[in-house]
Amino acid sequence: MSKYINPTQTAAWSALKANAIELQKVHMNDLFKSNPNRKKDCSIQIDSLLFDYSKNLINPQTKELLLQLANEVQLKESIQQLFSGEKINMTEQRAVLHTALRDFKYSGIKVDDVAVYPLVNDARNQVKSFSEKVISGTWKGYSGKAITDVVNIGIGGSDLGPQMVMEALSFYQNHLKVHFISNVDGDAAHAVLKKLNPETTLFVVVSKTFTTIETLTNATTCKNWLMQTAPESAVKNHFVAVSTNLKAISEFGIDAENAFPMWDWVGGRFSMWSAVGLAIALGLGYDHFEQFLQGAHAADTHFQNADFSQNIPVIMGLLTVWYTNFRDVKAETILPYAESLNKLVAYLQQLFMESNGKSVDRNGEKIDYQTGTVIFGAPGSNSQHSFMQHIHQGTQLVPADFIGFEQPLYGDMHHHKILMANFQAQTMALQEGKSADAVHLTMKMEGKENDINRLLPYKIFEGNRVSNTLLFNKLTPYALGMLIALYEHKVFVEGVVWNINSFDQFGVELGKEMAKKLG
Ligand code: F6P
Image 1 (cartoon, rainbow, N blue to C red):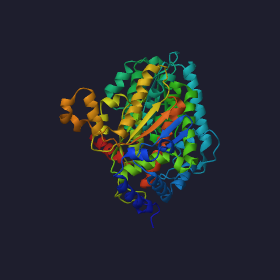
Image 2: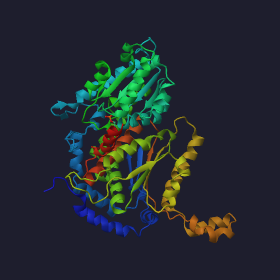
Image 3: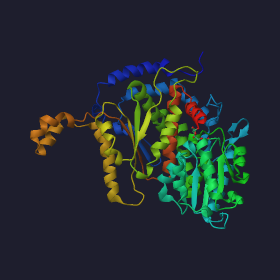
Image 4: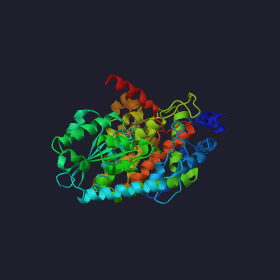
């Protein structure tokens, strides 16, 4: 007998198929008309976040069946296993404990008989004291000058998170300038280096494995650049590293005392909560980094304890399953209405697509249902002037997550009102659409009667397009931590239902092997 449950064998799966056929004839506008409390019924609040999923093509029966599906695939038990450090990454036989990185109370969790909390706590203290020294100027470059610039060298999970957070929270940034070198494209590395002074630059080399060709190539280039003007002994003032591979760090020439730990029970794409987030602590200050962790922890607590019917990541994940497997949806879009969240989608692409782009289940069997969605997106309102046409009038259904903030950071309410009016208008337009009668009337009022026959079909919006709204009070470190952790748990929910291991990434290996032979 198979150890893991195939979702298509559950009773809920068959019932959802029937429910999907029934709902194909229903317009979302009718769902709102039949229940004036729909918005309230389909909203969940945690802290300053309001999650509104009322604009989905679901009726109460759909929700019930999706929750039944979650129970049938034993989601509750899986969440318990995640948080308690069981080796749920079954292919690599590893625990998955990014949640422990943002837990500030002693938990007693052990991996291979080693308590996790003291390791996490020590690493956090190391990040705190190091970042405070660099920020205050106590940490000096080789010539006695304080550090002015930090360069994070890493790729994938060792780059995308810190880079995204630094841009998202630049409002809170201190005097340190933080740069990122990730691509093995040398032009990119040299474009950063030419702006820097070797005497005042600190390099943070981040690589879980310390074997990644891009990171090692870039780190070597940066070290050579430093050595052009500085003595050999300068490396200890200008290079620190974050990795599980202490041996490789030392072979690279970085002092053991400049090494920050990582553990194999944290996946790369879930790692910015560890010392991988050192660049964040440096650029924003440790207190902001800690608030970021606290926000994520609040999301963890919610995910662990809230009833599934009121559980944001559970609902988000189940909705994706619903559209993917019962409405043939292939892609989802994420639309933050904050320009500073420009890099959020790139971060979430790795999180979702490296985790759930799998076609073999946890029993080792080839999957015959769809898993994973293509994630794309960009900040609004810019996205409204590019790909939103496709979402409003294209032939595919593309569910959209709208992320917004009630207050702007710099207090400019004039801009913010326009931004948020667009935010709201998009979700309404997607849902409500515009009927032939309404188009007719508008064109008449605009004095364009002569064009009505010619243009009418093009100007109709069917509506009935799906969106979720995630509305926070303000873009703070805490809110951002919460947002990211909610998405991490959404990934987990999807993975459990699809019966895949969301925590390995064998799919990235073949290309690496081939490049090694060709390079
Ligand atoms: O190639 C994919 C990957 O392994 C990601 O999963 C990871 O985040 C990235 O490369 C970087 O790996 P490392 O931190 O070991 O350098």
